[in-house]
Image (cartoon, rainbow, N blue to C red; front, side, top):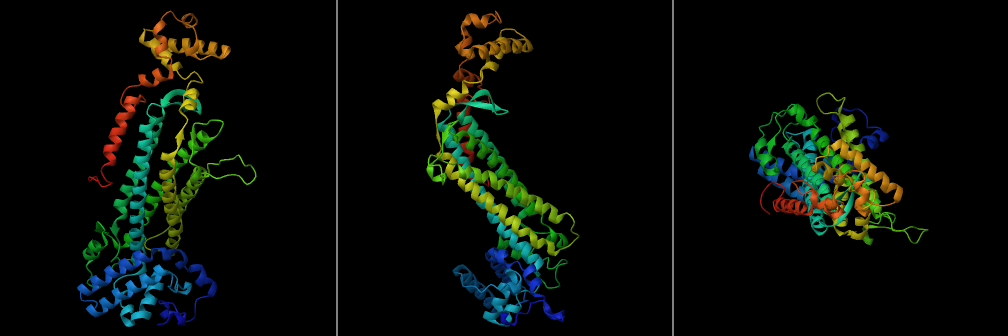
Length: 470
């Protein structure tokens, strides 16, 4: 059949042509064509299995496979004649195959439906996307670990409520970002397990009467196992929702990082300098250096959050089995995957290359009485109840506010007026370096502990995402 006939491959029972608007309204080939590699790969495996089962002749299977390979070359070269009247990637490829090889092309769809075909294509595609995102996550993790090592001794303010709270190591802060990414990687790999189940062979919803061998196609396509229930297999989009959920949380983490980068890169803060190649200027203000990459990553998180809501809402009212609503799953899924992958690439390239102004971060850490808790801990170690120590330090801070001095800049006699438990050694604990070094326990911000965590992170990164040695 020629596409020139402009007749749908399913039109046998219809007495009139589809309305022109409906044809355009229901078409998906303009976006699902990106699944062509997966569609061709699944079709070749299906054809080989049908031939091995005696459903196709070896000659037909050979013609189909050679024809599909030729079509792949056409699509890669941009020479494929996509036709919206043929609705989707599957029908476009099948129609073109039939044009090339004749009746053998019409036999390819034996024992399957577009329902199990698209479910298989999307899972194949998403599996590769997850692997790509995990690879970028690990590259970003490695960059953060290197930056943490470089800045393990760099002092910066730690914040709560965006108010200076306590001094921390800049390296410790980078490792906090690293921990977020480790959890993101874990969630993606967990989602991959449920993605890597094969729906092919479920046909429209009930399976097929042909003697198919699902284990054969499962093995060839690299799935872990065939799906167990044909009704569920063709209508399940949990795997897509689960991926986008993990992507939304990963983008939330990247957005939080982006917010800090934007704040730190401001001339008012001046903690870091971002590489020029990741910034843009202003069309009117020649002095501007805008952190646009970080701002766009922060903005793209909203797209992924929206995609998650779209998919959840899409699925919530659907009865079993497949419904045409599911055509609407691909655009938000594609968009979420693109946003996550591109954002990870941008940050993996940009963040490890930032330059820290160590003097600026240290001076900022000395503001806001950041070692007040250290003075309270000092008093507790000398037998003062914590609540009393808290009150004493609050009075000392009030004096500092009045006189414009940090606790470390006061005279011993001034501090002793608030408690006679304070002695000359107190100043060892009131410097930002002393404060950071004192938190020398597992998970703490002391540089020695930061370096131990760096060593552990590097050991983990020497294994691949499956737990094997790199």
